[in-house]
Image (cartoon, rainbow, N blue to C red):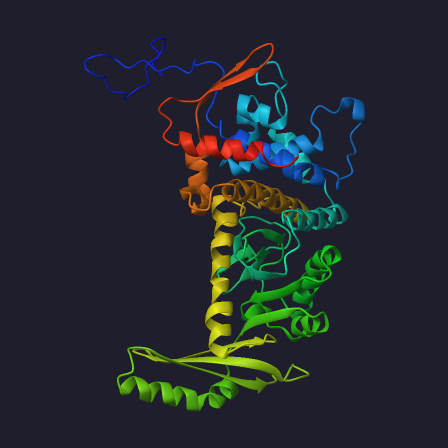
Length: 446
């Protein structure tokens, strides 16, 4: 800014008049919409649930920022598009975030700084993290008004690149990078997160997959003993240990299955029929479905395998899935298994829109804690979106769109003796949607 003029360099004059810009607007915020998410967080109580799992070693009389306040602040920052701990320093005096954490915007004390957040991230140990992951499963269960008859759990992993000496980082030849491969589990119908688990950058083996399923489904079944559960995943998760565990625990599964010479030979008739039908003019692409009983060398029993064979311009393509579900092969493949592709969008929302790949801490426990806080931010935006009417534009909006349109709202905050006033722009283009969602948040049960 030019010395003493209040004019930012490069700003053109308008109608011959110079434009004077100064950072002297007073008590204002760029994120007034964060108060919508703060209202949701108060009702979900995620910060309190996570804080209750951590033993606070500080002297109570010297505490200025409680664990719940720090977790709430960090989750709200992430939801608003500030994923780095350094952002805590820049926004600790922001009036909207102070109000969101429960402090008065002007007379209230500032929020915690980056070093305090770093100490928080390194505080939980393995036992506390296990409690917090169980608490997040409780959040998932509590989000249903009634016990569902059936839930479908999509399980998948994703590349999380690392650029230092973090614990659990491994070189992965498939991704050609040093990375983590955290496992994401979502409920497919609602898109609700169930568990996000940090793990080394390699494909999970059977013992690991069955351990994850045992813990996650065990917590769900403790709340809902009679619920039907189906687990979907790609061929990484078609491990004999995992399938055997599902069969013992009356859990349905449908996993991708890597093809091999035996399977391709056994669907040779289907492939030939599809190719001949295509030549006869049935279509540019011709598909055939079949099923067989198959046992790999590492399996102790035969299992139901469904084959999808396609003949097209690029030649023949055969895909396989293994399942213990009943149903016609075509329906199981196209309507049940292929629907798991939606999980990629859910991981995208968690990883890209909420920047949950900012796992730059040295300790694995600190990075797992970060994933939990990013999941808390996911819950806030997901819940806000679910409050919109079914026919509303916001109901299908991506998280980054909701953030840009509803959270990033300028507001002037005035703290009075008896009330606090927030003045939003008169030209704000999404006034109706903001007002409707604010009314819905206010009606949420405490």
